Amino acid sequence: MTETNSDDESDAQSDHSFRGGGPIVNLLHSVKQLLATLLAMAQTRLELLTTELQSDIQRLAVTLFWSLAALFTLGIGCFMAGLALIFIFWDTHRVLVSLCVTAAFFGFALLAI
Image (tube, rainbow, N blue to C red; front, top):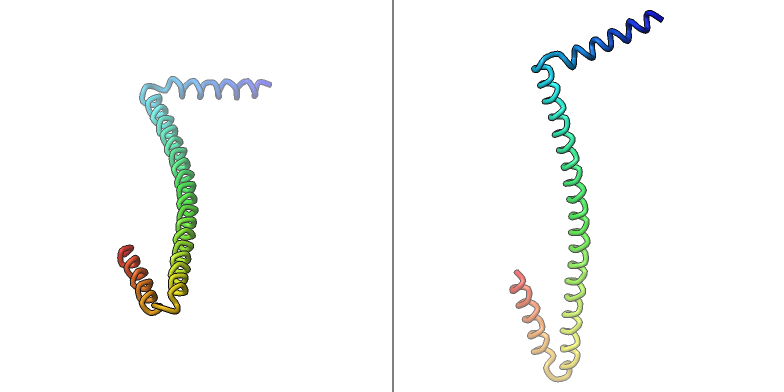
């Protein structure tokens, strides 16, 4: 039992010597704690940033997908409208209407470029 008491006393003395080790030891301990806190804050901010970037990238991918789907269906719609015009004027001016529809498509393409 005396061994346990001497161990407790030595722990208390070493703990006491650390706390009362002087201003430089206390300053270094405070700086170490400050750096650990700053590092933890930086890690938390970085995790928040990556989470935000992941959600923004996912939202951008969904928006890009639906934009491409809208452009594709718009293109198909314009193509079908052009075919309808050609079919309407099939008996009278099919070559003229075909050239006009083709020129309109190329004009829209150049405007888009």
